[in-house]
Amino acid sequence: MGLNDTPVGERLNIGFFGCRNVGKSSLVNAVTNQDISVVSEIKGTTTDPVKKSMELLPLRTCNYN
Image 1 (cartoon, rainbow, N blue to C red):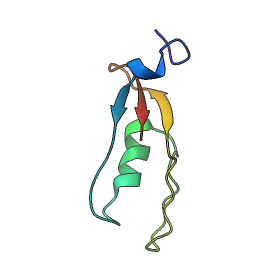
Image 2: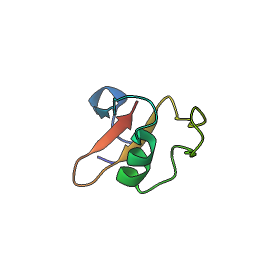
Image 3: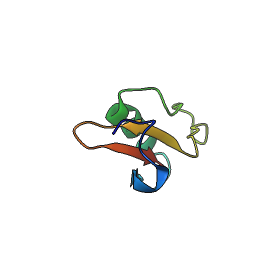
């Protein structure tokens, strides 16, 4: 099943947890090979989407929350 064919309830949910300003958003960008999260050297300026659907191969369709 592809991204548009997989029901939301059947998608793998992935979350990154940790202290502020340790590189979580940079890690998300590296794992997805996309600029999903805007990152900055200035503390408190990083922004993340509430939810992003993607396909991570060889895993499956998943949501980043």
